[in-house]
Amino acid sequence: MSIIIREPGLYTSIQDLGRQNHQHLGIVKNGSIDQLNHRLANMLVGNKEDEALIEMTFKLPTIQFTEPTLIAITGANFPAYKDNKKITPYKLHLMNKGEVLQFSDAAKGTRAYLAIAGGIVADEWLGSKSTSIRLGMGGFNGRILQSGDEVEFCRSYTTLQKKLFENLEFTQSAEWGVDQYTLAMNYFTDIFHVISGEGATHFKFDEVRSLENQIYKVSHRFNRTGLTLEGNPVIDRQMNDQSFLSVKKGTVLLNQDQQPVVMLNDHQSLSSYPQLGTIASYHIDKLAQKKQGSKMIFKMITIQEAEKNMKKHAQFIKQIKTGIEYKLKEELNK
Image 1 (cartoon, rainbow, N blue to C red):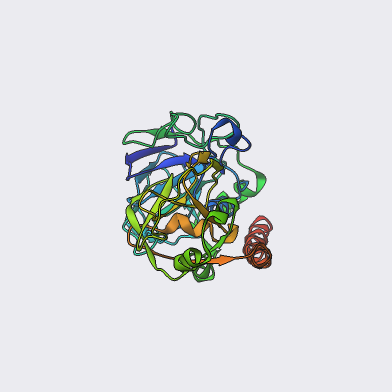
Image 2: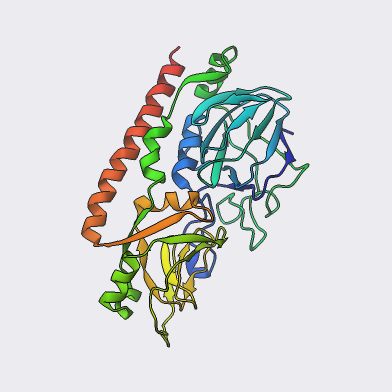
């Protein structure tokens, strides 16, 4: 065994970047909801970006390590402790045999990610280790992690990871990491850009503007399927005989109460609910960190505007990843 789940937290599961190319069969992608933080956690421990890791939600687990390994924690700012000694997120740490990883509550954010060097052993289904709770497939027996579960490490350490073990033997933590303030602008603004889709043609101009002029809050109805929002109804009429349209992560629907619902990873493939559009790709990851009471403000933009913003966002992410790669190269050459 490699780690033992002593306390499971509220919704702890094994996820990678999800199942690709199966939505036409009604099989959703699953995978980590905050894919940027998934990628960064894996990069920090020297893994490939799509390696499976542990996604932790709301109330985080207590985990005991039965052998040494390297870890990184990213995502919401849940204070983390190694045997009651606080450790820093977005940094590389060495966990020793018998040590326990614990967390306290986060002031902001909802989900955190725990990457383990070399990856973890999990059930693979349709090319992915992601847990599909609805279908009971993938991950750890197709379910969330429970007290007493034992998760094995792959132990397929690279030359870099073996060197990192040596470098951290005495310091226990790397001196470098990703600056959390660098990521703050990406996650903690309340504005979400929405690109109109096919379904938006059924809305009047004033109704779309009404959406933009409202401040919505995340209701208690939120999970891996989607976020139901609270606020003034977007429209004051019923839209009947809507055709079924494809749904993806970030699609903004209206429910029967005419309130917005934003789809997340475990969404259905098709829906006949009215669709206002889809949240721009560069604002998708911060959906993962919204919780009950969080504010959301929508702004409709054109595809051309979205493309310009996407290029800026891609450059921003590239700079962060280049910084990690540079530091890992330095570690290898020590």
